Image (tube, rainbow, N blue to C red; front, side, top):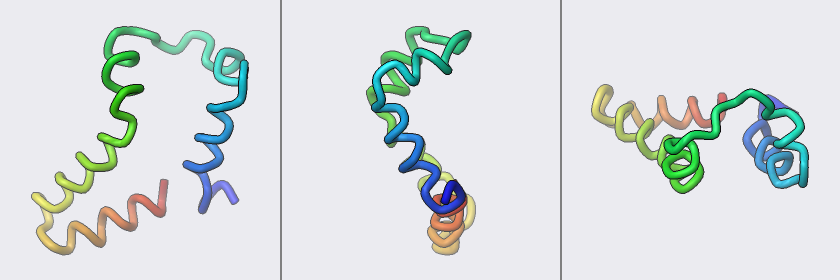
Length: 71
């Protein structure tokens, strides 16, 4: 289940009250985390697609799809 639904499980767990606070002890909560990573949480997926297409051309879309399944 984690292999195929890992991102969905993570997102559901992140929405539970107190769970993130409990397990995120010691992780950074700096400017870049609050203003970039939280605000544009899907930007990494789009950037990865762009990098794959630039590096590999049209096959980069297939490579990106495999990476998304892998996550």
